Image 1 (cartoon, rainbow, N blue to C red):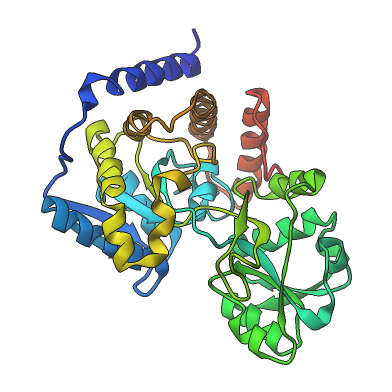
Image 2 (cartoon, rainbow, N blue to C red):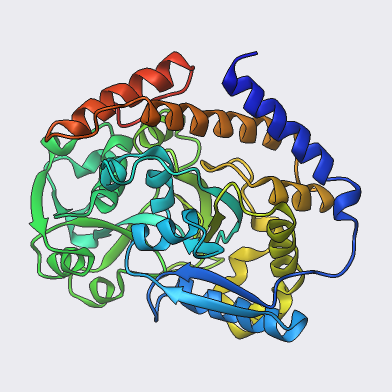
Length: 382
């Protein structure tokens, strides 16, 4: 048995063991003090984390210390180092586990983050367009002006994914360089650009109130080939129907895509019982914290995605099995993601020379070969 298979066999056996008597139904048993990193104060992720902390305090006498952090690295690395218990992170954790974009650096590399649970809201990540630009389908983006946010690979990737959905690339549009997310949307208002990505609940209001108007681009779920192209660029995009956001409602839904936020992640060596009871406590307190923070509705048990792009921690798997929500398909998917993480970790460890200006290019070649040889799609192989 090779090393990868041995690791997976051990993980599977452990998961089966801890899903039994070790996690018999009972009270939530959490340490008196826990810590999470989250997005900055004022963000939805921070507000939801604080609301969860209040519910845990009231329910179990637990003090949850929510540490605001300005970027993905400062949210993730303290968790991996054992300085913080969990992180209420964003989609950037996908890039972290893949070791790409800002994580393709000698001091960082692929991170073995694992999920506990996440919040899947009733909004989505969509492409907001100026109504007067007359963009009805993604193919209509050809020749239009799209913002390129300098120094933000994740925002660049989001827009690139919508271009791919329409069978286009950046060569087919006019690239408008902007300094940030807010500047990108200002460019639409000022008629300097025509479309930009945003959560439907987090952008577009100013454009909607302007003479140009706001229209969300629908990405119909039955357009299979388009979705394949989008997910080849952004595998973390999953189909959903949005009923929350500017101009959206239950009576005016939008077929679109998105990813969870916040995403509660931890290190693989975090204690299984701690992770199990963290998930159990949040699940049990859902009705309490969602009253205080309605935006936290995505944490509901029924809105979990067990076949996303990050594997679940063994303690979390045990809890979701108890709830009857963990399927054979979820288990198979999880094992494949754990194998992918192991392949990436071995490839990273095998790079003896992590110096030089050409390091990132060399790493991407090594990474792509290792994943391809192991039967995984490389993604970002150039």
